[in-house]
Image (cartoon, rainbow over all chains, first blue to last red; front, side, top):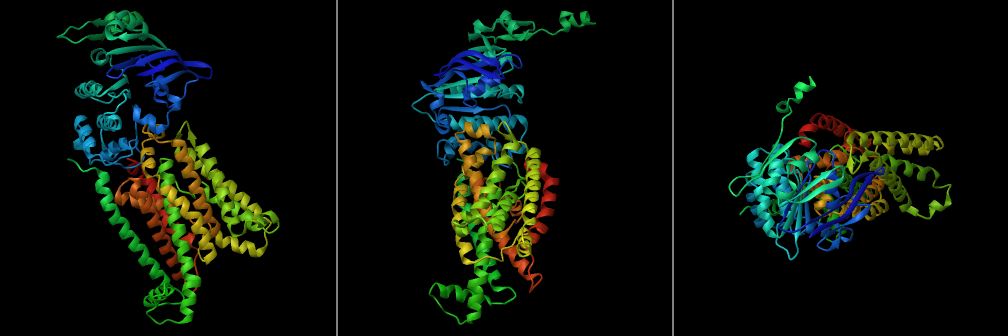
Length: 266
Length: 352
């Protein structure tokens, strides 16, 4: 279990994260949603151990994060940031192999091949990372972080993803979320920041709605993703069509023009 | 099943490094032979074999003396300093995540030079400095290099990321300040020290003797081994400091290891051979262009190629204006500066 209790993070006495408490169980995908500047990335960094929180604590599998060495923490959680650029011309395969660093064993062709197959990056392995498209780069980075926690271990692992599908086309977005859905079974808990409400609604197990540094609502998708609560967080009219066994849930933001707002403004 | 690059690379890495070792040995023997006083290669090999107790060829006592007292220490100094500068360049480029970084450019060399000059000029008048003996000069230069390294690092980075324009500007500022302070110290120096300094500031391996080689070996080999051991961490750092931390690298520790080692290597090099520029810039690039960016090969490759290049540059310095000598720093700058210009023009392509 990944738990955060009353995390508080300030920059110049302005709270960026205000008393946020969350818990992420292995086998679960939790999606963080919220408008720009809500503190999503900051919350993400605190959970990843990148920045320490002043008050409150982050606990991985019952152990406070402050007691982990960088290496041990890397065995428990992997992190995929929004953008990664490389300063030197590495090949895609070399980037994926970096995920083996914490395990101390860089001879794992079986593991690397399995992950690259899964992320559809095997055909890119000999290409230079810098020559790849945005979507390809994201998949290679995803392969890298999956490599880090792929091996089954006696303890649960966690995967933190910051907008993992931002540069991908629709088919790839669904492909990536299917991969995430699959890896949950490996005793891995996944926390992702997403911008696409429909992807979140149809793949997540739990949703966290964040606004101005505070968690407004959190819980199962059906309870959290209601029109009223989404409108409250995003300050924009949003319609929710609840799904069924056969049909996906559809979330629609209402265009201004339809509301005749534009005419009013004129 | 795909073969991991790691597996394939270790196989051919040994081949590449072996070939580079042979090239280094060849240029060293050539350099031992050629010079104002010519020693045939067969005699060079004979004398070297004889010192190991395997004499098989006749040679003159003069040849023996020139080789063992003048040329061999000089070439060993070139190998040590060249290798050290090469590997330092590779490490700093990896750490700063930028292919334009070089010990001379970001002020490490000038910091080392400033402290070395202070030691040379005031060393005799401050008795406590005398306690250090022959090791005082390189240690002092190390201190100067370290101060500038830390300052440049602090000035050039914002929230864990180094901004290359800030970094280069910080280097320019520190170079200017160190240069001015060196000038101030020189102002109080006598004529002999002045002439000495001019040659030294352009880089010179000619003053090498066995005690300097011994001290350099002691001070350089340790930090070089430390840097070589960091290849995995440097690979991780090339995605970014945060990402390296996510992957399990103790970034702060790696930073200190690399900065201390670099200052130690460059400080020692500066103390004994003056400021020799561009080796640390060119060498890692050549290796990357030939064999890719993996530090597993870039670090030891830069060590060997740096040693090779400086030995070769020393050979040129000793022979093109024979029987006189040209400062080696002029040779490396004449080769290095155009390369640097080419690099700036092509930096977008290289950084991918």
